[in-house]
Length: 334
Image 1 (tube, rainbow, N blue to C red):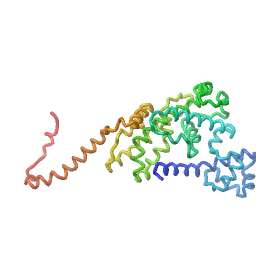
Image 2: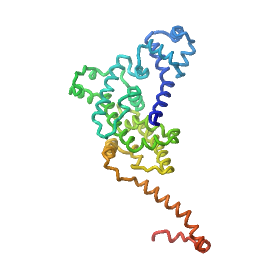
Image 3: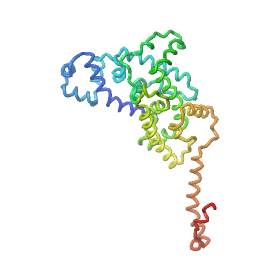
């Protein structure tokens, strides 16, 4: 298992422990229309235990299966169902989100497959809703009626995609997914290998870089303040976090002499279109001869260290170590 997969596995495990129990209990209570005490009796546990689960305490696999059966959500993400308003709404949102992710992947020109949009870990729907909520977007209690239309066998149904672009929720999700393909392409081209080949980075905050790329992509999409009132605060936090995390990668790369083929902080400050174009050029081999200026700086610093170590020995051999005095004024350009 590479560090990329391991990092996502750790993120997924942490998510399940912290969030599944609270949402599953809430959905089960709503499905039964009963009190916590009644639910406790049905499960054969104390009412106190139900309260602990509602506060996020770890839920065993056995109890999770029982609550999933009671709530009727099957394999769906419980928080996603809760945010959707109902399982019926969640099914509709899920179908829409997967269609938007598929279209974003179809239109991706970076040359790198945006694997998270394929949702092999079952977190895509939760991830995009969580991202919207972090920006202050209020998920509607009912699935938008203008999007509640049956699609035909033709994935290019014009009426469907016109409705998608008119609706602020679906258009925001698609734009985030499109930005994600560009961001992810740049990440794979220039950052992933630096992290995957260094266990020290995996044990640092830099391990957050890949799991949080959806938030980074969302920070690069224009959002109306009426739709996403918390967007600017969200964008500021995401950018500050990534500056810190990528700074750790750059510092580590310098210490171990790993070459940088691009300015990593462009991932933070660059527009997603530009990142996509750079990633595409990299995938086509057009940047094969390019080396980032940091490499030349590294070579210069290494050369200075060599001179610093060798010069005293040369001066001593020539008997000049006591005669030579450095006049710093001669170092300035007049």
